[in-house]
Amino acid sequence: TVNVPKDKTIDNTLAIFKDGYNFIPKRVQNHHLDVYETRVLGEKVALLSGIEGAKLFYDTTRMNRKNALPKRVLKTLFGENGIQTMDGEAHKHRKLLFMSLMTPEALQELYEITTKYWAHFTKKWSKMKKVTLYDESRELLCRTACEWAGVPLKEKEVQKRTRDLSNMIDGFSAIGPKHMESRRARKRTEAWIEELILKVREGELEAEKGKAIYEMAMHKDLDGRPLDARMAAIELINIIRPLVAISKFITFGAVALQEYPETNTRVSLDDEYLFMFSQEVRRFYPFVPFLGARVDHDFTWQQYNFEKDQLVLIDVYGINHDPKVWENPDEFNPERFVDWDGGLFDLIPQGGGGYYSGHRCPGEWPTIEVLQASFRYMTKHLDYDVPKQDYSYSLRKMPSLPKSGFIMSNVHYKN
Ligand code: HEM
Image (tube, rainbow, N blue to C red; front, side, top):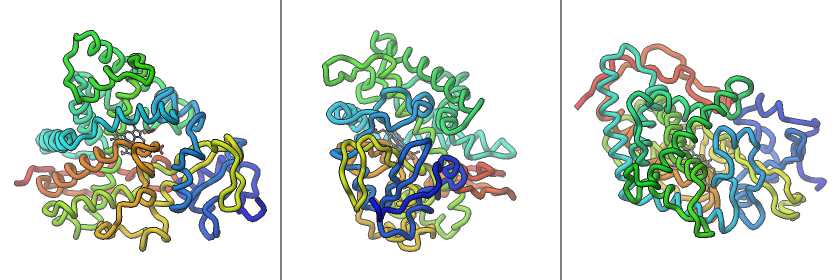
């Protein structure tokens, strides 16, 4: 593969931390191909970008997920042997379980639960001098997630569970104590949820059919056997943990409402605009930088020889900001979605491709639902001041977040 652009340095692991969200974009841009070779942690890695790159990444005949995720990620963010690591028929069967939870009724219920907690929290915030939206929305979403999933949450444990669920997310890429805390957070959370799964199975805890807790507890694998209780817990955590993570998009969205004040009225009144605004928040702001898979067998694509088991990374952030796909990609403009054709490989903040065929996030609709409920509530019913603060965010730090966490003061309910 003579013509394929490559990094000349021996190892670029440190560059990932230096370049952050721009690690892949910086390398692939200005080249004629959608593939670029580099070395990370001693491995030869193919970086993929562009729509064509995304299509290849989600071609399950050529890519798989076995050993695509480092142990440190499985021990914190995802849990071991969960859906993220599966391939083929076993993955499809597990994915159906997740997708079965996303009925229109369930999504409507999620919208309503989210709105209910915004109202509860508004009462609490109106008595506070300063409200840090990122912190508060995590707790708001922890309550929302548990209620929606059918997970009982005791008042005295709310803060601890919120902290653990978000530490699992934030600690996977960290080193030292923060990473170790992330591992402990996962252990505690798995133990908590496993106990609840066992109680549902033994009939000690009532669970409604269609609720995530019930479906995870009762699911049968392809071999006809129920999931191991720990495994069922890991998959249930795969529902509640990412729901809490939506707090990052909410915080970025609050920044957008502040930075682009002309959007506020339409977000509060116009359902179509509310949807487009939520899509633009997911496209525009940095969340997932890239995703990994492994090459299934040797093949050549765009002149590059992919080797069996080679690690491949797809440029998630870069594709959401690709000038070949998006006009003026670095402009925040919800109206770009007016004539968006709903492509499966261009708007990929939560992965690309089909829901059933590959690993695209089954929580994309719930995410949009929670965002719409939140942005509608904020613009319609929340009155607040935004004191002087630094809510800028860095593209170097992964995961990114507005620095101040978005501080509000004088919060009141408005009718
Ligand atoms: C997978 C992002 C919310 C459940 C994924 C993937 C991404 C992602 C990038 C991986 C796609 C791939 O591997 O190709 C996000 C973001 C969210 C979010 C940024 C918003 C904060 C949710 C929610 C749920 C959820 C709310 C559940 C209700 C899952 C599951 C998978 C997944 C179970 C694994 C799917 C599979 O391996 O087939 N998500 N997600 N996510 N997400 Fe989400």
